[in-house]
Length: 410
Image (cartoon, rainbow, N blue to C red):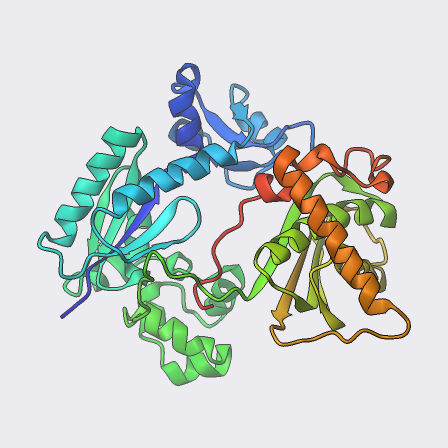
């Protein structure tokens, strides 16, 4: 028996929630983004009215306002969006226990075996979200997760698309290969080089050829394009094994020297370390990502001798990687840091040099900082060395930066 899977996508989620709470802007072009005076000034999402002006996600706000001078820009309110995400989830739980989020605004639901059909359930959910929460959703109904996602993207807003075995070639095959989930810009470019531009052309390409070009991902591309995805929708209570913990940010202003980079990395490393301790994790590998104003980007990683959840050690590794791999050909626009390769069995022996004791005391200190910030807010305690950072430390990655679920293939 075929599965019945829904993919539900909240339309223009952040902007829809903002317009719901701000009636005075509902009939205006609206974008959710940062302060246009800072480098956080990019569009995160926009409403349907703003879409008519050809605005794109990730576009600088100053550039968007040249296209649409009357654009209303509101800062993101992540706690509010998280609340709405949870409210949506409560609706989904009335239909299945198998609910897998894909970011704050998207979820798969497996309703196989339900007495109602997938289309009937989709229509009921669509109406309930609109009536109970005041926002709209687009829903894809299919026999696998990949085509369900394709269906929710196919027709927007406030729509339902069924992609079944009887019509998937008619709907999916003419679409650009880039519409297929996990076919990114680099893969799209490589496919186009070989004359593969649509999902149908990808589906009909010999799998051995795809393996030669893409390695093991060639099998995945072939399976996904032919509707052979058999990945299950996870149970709502299931927690995936965490592979890494990280944060990244577009910097409040251009970073022009090592001191600027250290100031931002210090904030990010504190966030990562706090999340590691929260989950009882220590990792051996630190990875950094850097992108400059000329759009040059790179990632580098370093393996530590001892697994850590200390912000100071993560920062030391991050700055060493940065200094060894960047020569300041341009100013820095965004940076990120993550910790991976978790070690659950490592036992640190105390030594005559006192290193282990020092690390133990440092962990106690950082745990105390976690407690203070949990009770009195993130900015209740700051490092003295950050006071002259020129505003580079005035953000909280735990709240201001959405942390998405672990990747699909984790």
